[in-house]
Length: 640
Image 1 (cartoon, rainbow, N blue to C red):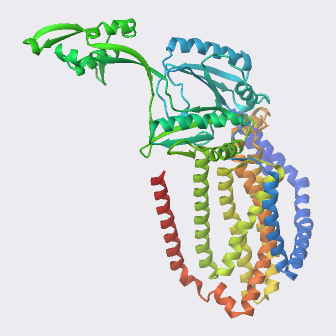
Image 2 (cartoon, one colour):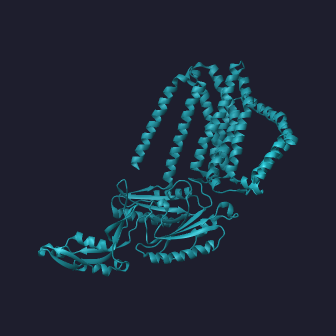
Image 3 (tube, rainbow, N blue to C red):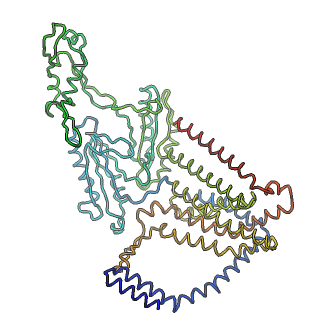
């Protein structure tokens, strides 16, 4: 009957043109047939033979642990120490945010200040030819290559999106990951970063797009001070000191201070200006109107109004001699208000000079920032650590402070936030568990499982030498804590229920492990199997699978780069935490309850007669801790 129903539904789907739906219904029908003839045998064999044998084996191991319950506790503590040593010895790469193959590569060009946009555009043509020599023309994995000059030429991480006539940018966009046929865009990034550009006077940097929220550059050194000459001198010395060290992985260390911006200075002869009956304001506004224009009127339509600027032609306002010979028409009140005309050159001397582009301040203190990216193939944290040690050995000149910022500072803040979030989560769990069990001893037993579950994370990441993302791994450990605590509650709660039914402490502990083994393992297996496709980046197109039998299966992509570290953290932690729940929790429960029987003093310290009455007091303490911590964070922000 069921097969007939499936056939009718499939025929209806085919008749209405939904081929994929029809194929999916046929697949369900075939799966039903497979179950009727073979799959039910496998299920019965598993339920009545394999699984009972596994349970019996587990019970034997559990009884061996409960003979000397201190033994598994000591083993786990030693394993925790070993996991830390093993993790440090293996030395997996630690990153702030994970990075994969870039989808976009940016080539930035910077010429000396004051360069004409026409010259910048000419140099950009040479840069384009160099880029094409690396990626090639008509490359099938390159979707587009766009060049910008003057407008949209800054790094988004700099926070400066102004127009610069001396800068240019090339944005190379690649096709989606599944269309690259196994080619890695990282190779192109590495080749462009190591390319010898051979363009005199040009400063060229190559970066990839940043995943996650906006981040500072991996290398950022803040030089601050009040005396400007000392500040500039110290910044130059620090830059030269780092460059002379020739640290591998450093990519184009540069300063945000520009001290050679060309300018044209009109020196006003104030005595002559007064004799002519002019003011410095009139001269300044005349020059400004010639170069930038003045607002003559406004044009209005139904939607908006538009200012109309009146200024000289391009060839006139860009010619210094034309501006120098501008004639100012004014009414000279020194001579009875007659109208006079005087050229600017009669009251101004013109000279060429260099000046500072801008002076940045932080907390009212002058600041120069040295920043750099890290070349592809190098770990940003390792390079930053080397430079940080190098900077600490540098002795600045005068009253100058040198501070290492950038991603290192962001990582410190993120670690502080994740630590606070973890402590807050544990505090809330503590309150809930105390209210549930009316016992601090049982609560501590369950919460200790969160700490020991980190053993699995350290061993797994260290064994396979995976990249450890600070943000995603931290979030994974916090998420892991919820599942681990739930499994511990299942086991302890059942043991308490069995004891209330008349079982002895030992029998209740064994029975709790035997009975709760199934839900604990099923929870862990379901979570692990659900996370594996996300961890390995398994991509399947089910629509095309059932429509034209082409699933477009591939591994990798952008999702696995970002979510892979979180998934592997939870997988490693869950696998180890499952063993902890089934072996360590019963042992610790048995130890606690035996100590409770032997000594009323220990009972008073570990298990109050009515701990629930202390929950409001614990909540108050928890709120005070959060309040004090929040105040410290606020004061820290004021100090930054």
